[in-house]
Length: 354
Image (cartoon, rainbow, N blue to C red):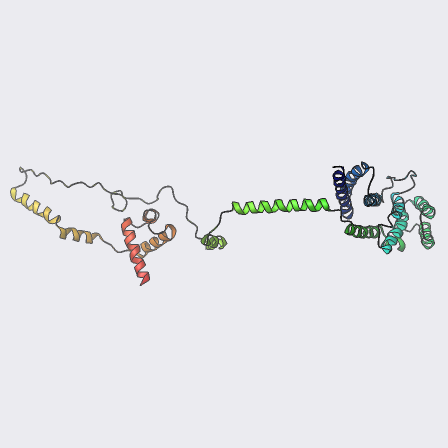
């Protein structure tokens, strides 16, 4: 159990170390400050650190000084005249084994020498720049040729000297980022990050699968309508609550009359003669004969107009065959019945087939 806890704490330190490097690369001062505090809290609680964790702690100390390089109110040494960049020079000497690229190590060292003096000149503090140069001569392996050049720059107080502009502070940051990339490539420190990534991807796949199950399956016709342009869609018109047509309640197409057995009128003998009664009865029988019924029926029959045929076709496209009552309600057929619509549709289909 103790070994498992120790390994878990190492993973936590690796994760915090990677967060510190990431915020440094992004030049996120606020994020860097939060991450470095969390890292310090975890590292300081450990009594015996492995060698790789000691190296990572040293790198974080170095990055912390570089991030505060322009702030002279921050001190990492008992001597207040030692600026953060001057302190970073000494920390960088302890990272020579971590920097496998010797040329990159020398470049960062020289940039630290130059910027330890150059930052003081940029702040307008010539005295502090001279003190930084003297401190480097005593405490750091400052090359003699560079010492002479920096001494000339301090005497001239030239902030825009070629030495300072060529080996600038931004170039120092770029070379440090290259060092971090090489170090993280050899020491990934991303076990927790990879595990968290797998968990997040699993959640996303689960959500996507649930969304696919929740979506109803569309048949081919619905998919065609969904992919069609809005102008091509046949939208169903909004159905009216009440019909706007004036309907005659006694027409066969709109309502059914109660079938009543016709009664023979009672004739008063006092007003009509026997002869007139017989004549009237013969006329009534003549009207009730089958021949006269057919003639009356044929007399009321009328042709279908082009407008009625068009309404019938539109109604069938909208509601389908067999929905004669709905079609009759929505379109004006001037006294037609459901049966008439059905017969006329059958006739139109035969005409199209022929």
